[in-house]
Image (cartoon, rainbow, N blue to C red; front, side):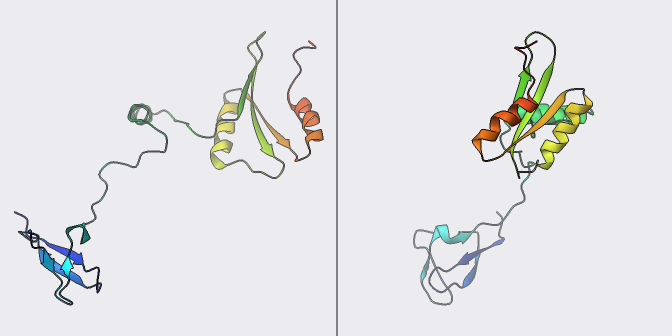
Length: 152
């Protein structure tokens, strides 16, 4: 049996008690060497252990993480974040535009800049539409960014 000491902090006086793990806690409990108050089992400070598994990116399931890691091992670049807000597809042709909508003063995040660069490298148009707070300007800005397919 492991006889490494546990450090138990007393709730009454804050003293750190060093206790042997072999039979440290029984039905009578243990007492603080400083003030004599009873130490509770849940007061034991658990030793910190290092995390054995890598931290999972937020929102990934086990399957998605496995696919992502495998693809990286095979030399693929994997992009998950930074996708534009909209994908506009022309139903009459093979044309598509990715559209990112931002407020006038908002900046693109680093992952968005990377994604836009990759999409453009692949030959896909990416537009950033900046809209002011005034609703009257929305329509003008939108018309300048999105081609009208109904007039062709």
